[in-house]
Length: 256
Ligand code: 13P
Image 1 (tube, rainbow, N blue to C red):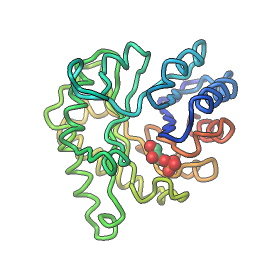
Image 2 (image 1 turned 180 degrees about the vertical axis):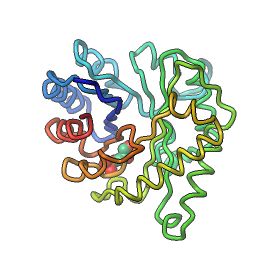
Image 3 (image 1 turned 60 degrees about the vertical axis):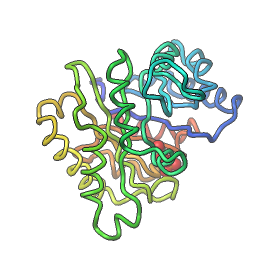
Image 4 (image 1 turned 90 degrees about the vertical axis):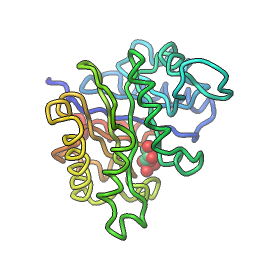
């Protein structure tokens, strides 16, 4: 069977304790043991990372982180270096999630610095989160917001031929709401993202080095209406990734 090029990311946020994280990793490993049709990446928080990596040894499931700092070493108390993430076996890192933008005051200047730092390190791929809030959506400012976020995050970033950047469109108003947006609306937003990227990097680079994915209340019931979207490179899944059975159904429906 031809492998799907799509990627499914599980963002476990700060929803689990250590034992719960390990149990979930074991459950997902078991559930996906015969699954070889695309990439699955789980993103626990920092403390359980090494153990999760160990648990997932001899499986196809990769590990990502939920954040990183923009320097590789130095006096930055409480921060994590991209080099440490690579040493820990991480292959992806979520950047600028809307929850960090909201609670940690992370902005796109910081996200830009983080992307730059990651691109300079071998073996790490950034998942750059963008998305409008409800107010911006309601007042028809979404297109500009997405354009502006992408410009701020990615202007002047050098991409080597073998490097990839994942752009995750996560409308803030859909995250954790239990209701995903209309697939046609996601398709429209993805088009805006692609056109903006085309303008900045050219179509060839965008086709070869970028993936555009959707996140926001995806579950096993609504996932099928997203899988056929023209520009969908994968999904960033929150709540539905906390149950192996539910996560498996989402992955199975997407990675066909
Ligand atoms: P939910 O799937 O729980 O809405 O979370 C989405 C998300 O924020 C993934 O990063």
